[in-house]
Image 1 (tube, rainbow, N blue to C red):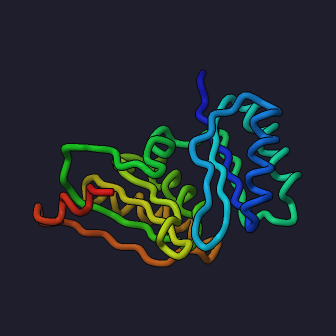
Image 2 (tube, rainbow, N blue to C red):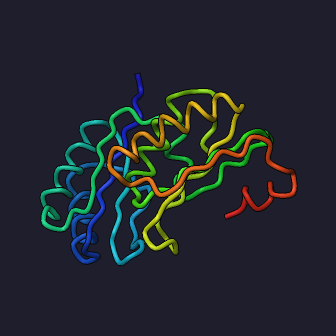
Length: 185
Protein backbone atom coordinates (compact mmCIF):
# COMPACT_ATOMS: atom_id res chain seq x y z
CA UNK A 1 0.00 0.00 0.00
CA UNK A 2 1.24 3.47 -0.89
CA UNK A 3 0.89 5.91 2.02
CA UNK A 4 0.93 9.65 1.58
CA UNK A 5 3.22 11.11 4.23
CA UNK A 6 3.53 14.79 5.06
CA UNK A 7 6.10 16.62 7.14
CA UNK A 8 5.93 20.31 8.05
CA UNK A 9 8.39 22.39 10.04
CA UNK A 10 7.83 26.07 10.79
CA UNK A 11 10.77 28.15 12.03
CA UNK A 12 10.99 31.59 13.62
CA UNK A 13 14.35 32.09 11.84
CA UNK A 14 14.62 32.27 8.05
CA UNK A 15 18.37 31.49 8.13
CA UNK A 16 17.88 28.38 10.29
CA UNK A 17 14.99 27.29 8.06
CA UNK A 18 17.16 27.40 4.94
CA UNK A 19 20.02 25.59 6.73
CA UNK A 20 17.58 22.89 7.89
CA UNK A 21 16.17 22.55 4.36
CA UNK A 22 19.65 21.85 2.99
CA UNK A 23 20.41 19.24 5.63
CA UNK A 24 16.99 17.61 5.24
CA UNK A 25 17.36 16.98 1.51
CA UNK A 26 20.89 15.67 2.06
CA UNK A 27 19.84 13.05 4.62
CA UNK A 28 16.95 11.42 2.69
CA UNK A 29 15.18 11.56 -0.70
CA UNK A 30 12.18 13.78 0.03
CA UNK A 31 10.03 15.91 -2.28
CA UNK A 32 9.77 19.55 -1.20
CA UNK A 33 6.23 20.87 -1.67
CA UNK A 34 6.91 24.35 -0.25
CA UNK A 35 9.97 25.96 1.29
CA UNK A 36 9.80 29.72 1.72
CA UNK A 37 9.42 32.68 3.99
CA UNK A 38 5.94 33.29 5.33
CA UNK A 39 4.37 36.10 7.30
CA UNK A 40 5.41 37.39 9.76
CA UNK A 41 9.09 36.68 9.02
CA UNK A 42 9.10 32.91 9.49
CA UNK A 43 10.25 30.03 7.30
CA UNK A 44 8.17 26.96 6.40
CA UNK A 45 9.21 23.62 4.93
CA UNK A 46 6.51 21.25 3.69
CA UNK A 47 7.67 17.92 2.28
CA UNK A 48 6.60 14.41 1.39
CA UNK A 49 8.12 11.06 0.45
CA UNK A 50 8.16 7.55 1.81
CA UNK A 51 7.60 7.15 5.56
CA UNK A 52 11.25 6.52 6.50
CA UNK A 53 12.63 9.38 4.36
CA UNK A 54 10.11 11.89 5.68
CA UNK A 55 10.75 10.75 9.25
CA UNK A 56 14.57 11.04 8.90
CA UNK A 57 14.33 14.46 7.28
CA UNK A 58 11.75 15.63 9.81
CA UNK A 59 13.98 14.61 12.72
CA UNK A 60 17.00 16.28 11.11
CA UNK A 61 15.10 19.51 10.46
CA UNK A 62 13.76 19.49 14.00
CA UNK A 63 17.21 18.84 15.48
CA UNK A 64 18.78 21.72 13.52
CA UNK A 65 16.07 24.22 14.36
CA UNK A 66 14.92 23.00 17.77
CA UNK A 67 15.30 26.40 19.44
CA UNK A 68 13.57 28.10 16.50
CA UNK A 69 10.65 25.68 15.91
CA UNK A 70 7.32 27.50 16.00
CA UNK A 71 5.23 24.44 15.13
CA UNK A 72 5.71 21.03 13.52
CA UNK A 73 3.72 18.21 11.99
CA UNK A 74 4.53 14.64 11.01
CA UNK A 75 1.47 13.08 9.39
CA UNK A 76 2.08 9.57 8.05
CA UNK A 77 -1.39 9.14 6.54
CA UNK A 78 -2.46 12.53 5.20
CA UNK A 79 -5.67 12.62 3.13
CA UNK A 80 -4.96 12.60 -0.62
CA UNK A 81 -6.74 15.97 -1.14
CA UNK A 82 -4.41 17.88 1.18
CA UNK A 83 -1.07 17.99 -0.67
CA UNK A 84 -2.46 19.09 -4.06
CA UNK A 85 -4.48 21.88 -2.36
CA UNK A 86 -1.49 23.42 -0.57
CA UNK A 87 -1.05 26.85 -2.18
CA UNK A 88 -3.09 25.74 -5.22
CA UNK A 89 -6.70 26.02 -6.27
CA UNK A 90 -8.16 22.70 -7.30
CA UNK A 91 -10.51 23.39 -10.20
CA UNK A 92 -13.88 21.71 -9.88
CA UNK A 93 -17.19 22.09 -11.68
CA UNK A 94 -19.28 21.50 -8.57
CA UNK A 95 -20.86 24.57 -6.98
CA UNK A 96 -22.55 23.56 -3.76
CA UNK A 97 -22.24 24.54 -0.11
CA UNK A 98 -18.88 26.01 0.80
CA UNK A 99 -16.93 26.15 4.03
CA UNK A 100 -13.95 28.24 5.05
CA UNK A 101 -11.71 27.55 8.04
CA UNK A 102 -9.40 30.44 8.93
CA UNK A 103 -6.56 29.73 11.35
CA UNK A 104 -3.76 31.65 12.98
CA UNK A 105 -1.02 29.28 11.79
CA UNK A 106 0.05 27.26 8.77
CA UNK A 107 0.16 23.89 10.49
CA UNK A 108 -3.24 24.30 12.10
CA UNK A 109 -4.78 24.91 8.65
CA UNK A 110 -3.15 21.77 7.25
CA UNK A 111 -4.36 19.73 10.23
CA UNK A 112 -7.86 21.21 9.86
CA UNK A 113 -7.94 20.38 6.14
CA UNK A 114 -6.81 16.80 6.78
CA UNK A 115 -9.44 16.26 9.49
CA UNK A 116 -12.17 17.82 7.32
CA UNK A 117 -11.22 15.69 4.29
CA UNK A 118 -11.12 12.49 6.34
CA UNK A 119 -14.69 13.16 7.48
CA UNK A 120 -15.66 12.50 3.87
CA UNK A 121 -18.00 13.75 1.21
CA UNK A 122 -16.30 17.09 0.63
CA UNK A 123 -13.50 18.33 -1.59
CA UNK A 124 -10.65 20.47 -0.27
CA UNK A 125 -10.09 23.02 -3.02
CA UNK A 126 -7.43 25.23 -1.46
CA UNK A 127 -5.13 25.54 1.54
CA UNK A 128 -3.63 29.04 1.50
CA UNK A 129 -0.56 29.42 3.70
CA UNK A 130 0.35 32.61 5.58
CA UNK A 131 1.58 34.80 2.76
CA UNK A 132 0.20 38.30 2.87
CA UNK A 133 -2.26 37.43 5.64
CA UNK A 134 -0.27 38.41 8.72
CA UNK A 135 0.51 34.78 9.51
CA UNK A 136 -3.03 33.49 9.01
CA UNK A 137 -3.94 30.58 6.75
CA UNK A 138 -7.22 29.25 5.45
CA UNK A 139 -8.88 26.18 3.99
CA UNK A 140 -11.66 26.23 1.39
CA UNK A 141 -13.90 23.21 0.97
CA UNK A 142 -17.04 22.36 -0.98
CA UNK A 143 -19.73 19.69 -0.89
CA UNK A 144 -23.29 18.95 0.16
CA UNK A 145 -24.44 20.99 3.16
CA UNK A 146 -24.58 18.12 5.67
CA UNK A 147 -21.14 16.89 4.61
CA UNK A 148 -19.68 20.42 4.74
CA UNK A 149 -21.10 20.88 8.25
CA UNK A 150 -19.56 17.59 9.45
CA UNK A 151 -16.22 18.37 7.80
CA UNK A 152 -16.15 21.88 9.26
CA UNK A 153 -16.84 20.52 12.72
CA UNK A 154 -13.97 18.02 12.44
CA UNK A 155 -11.57 20.57 10.94
CA UNK A 156 -12.31 23.37 13.38
CA UNK A 157 -11.99 20.98 16.33
CA UNK A 158 -8.30 20.54 15.43
CA UNK A 159 -7.67 24.29 15.31
CA UNK A 160 -9.72 24.96 18.47
CA UNK A 161 -7.69 22.33 20.36
CA UNK A 162 -4.57 24.43 19.77
CA UNK A 163 -6.46 27.71 20.30
CA UNK A 164 -5.59 28.67 16.72
CA UNK A 165 -9.03 28.97 15.10
CA UNK A 166 -9.56 32.51 13.87
CA UNK A 167 -12.94 32.15 12.14
CA UNK A 168 -15.12 29.62 10.36
CA UNK A 169 -18.04 30.04 8.03
CA UNK A 170 -20.42 27.93 5.98
CA UNK A 171 -22.31 29.33 3.02
CA UNK A 172 -25.14 26.87 2.28
CA UNK A 173 -26.28 28.25 -1.08
CA UNK A 174 -23.54 30.48 -2.46
CA UNK A 175 -24.60 32.78 -5.27
CA UNK A 176 -23.05 32.04 -8.68
CA UNK A 177 -21.71 35.63 -8.76
CA UNK A 178 -19.12 34.80 -6.08
CA UNK A 179 -17.79 31.62 -7.73
CA UNK A 180 -15.03 33.30 -9.78
CA UNK A 181 -13.84 35.13 -6.66
CA UNK A 182 -13.98 32.04 -4.46
CA UNK A 183 -12.10 30.01 -7.07
CA UNK A 184 -9.36 32.55 -7.79
CA UNK A 185 -5.86 32.77 -6.44
